Length: 475
Image (cartoon, rainbow, N blue to C red; front, side, top):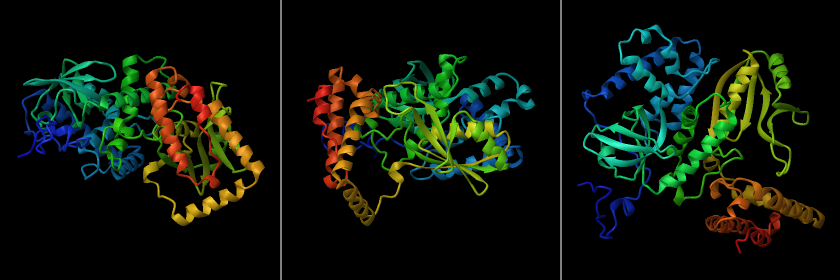
């Protein structure tokens, strides 16, 4: 007999099963085993979803942007392995592809295009309204507040909005408890919603960490997007749609079996985006036109030394070293434009900008992505050769002195003002002002010193953190 997650653990520890031997999070569950017809509004949503999927199939075969759509489909399927062990659920994949991914010159989703067809205007009520719910749906994180006989009460962990979600008796409902966190797509209104995807279920401890991640996504979206004419609700909705690729990667990351608060934070770039090394590839139809576009684009500069274009943004503060932030490096290689960047958000943003400035001279082909964890480790021979080269360079007293001075200047002038993911995206100076922040700083310094001590002293310039810790008041 299967032990329920809220029942006493059979090992005899006295703890709940989910806190003991059943600590295996996220809890990936199979799709709900539901009858073909439930007699509820869920049936209507499913019928309309099938119409959108069939329309998507037609777009893949006959649509004007069919090549790009097929490439996107194949790329997502390869990266996230829907329905397979370690992959995302089929419902997550299907709704992401049809409701979230914008493509083509118009940058519209499949359901956006479907809503413009005459067949939608010919539907009887409430068909068009329910289709609008599907179009506006997004995946987000919700806390389970209450389980009732026919509904579950969920609360968005970011907005606090409560939703009455139709209970259909699936295994994810039976095996969840109040306080659990769901990553799920809802459709409908707060008064009556349904789940469109099988939820990923996390224990309550994940709420704080997930809120920080969501806040980072929201800030990044507001920086990247013109939100002047958008309501707060629409900004949040669009930011959740933009983050769906991050969560798909998160759910399929190797070894992702515990809540984030129990594991070191994922590497992030300066825009608080998860570090994913991306290679954007586009077909060049007109080489001279693309070169002119890159030269005239006010966000790129040509580097004569490398022969590449640098996509950059101007810093808004003088407190940090340097004036510009390099976002990507762009090159032209045998009829292809290739751009290298360090996050999926930057790759997608650059794709949209290049399609716009390219004015038909560029065709999107693919984005190849790899997480730092998945990158091949250097061989012992390569590491040994690198260490020897570093030792030889640093054996010069003048070089070593300059390297250590540069390192000290970086930590004291720049690093203390950077927003650090492990500090909840606060700067070290901000964190040092509160007792909790100072405790987080101590843990961060312990980790940094541990990593530093693992590197042979002669092969790299090292930082003595004691003076810095005194400055931040954490000794």
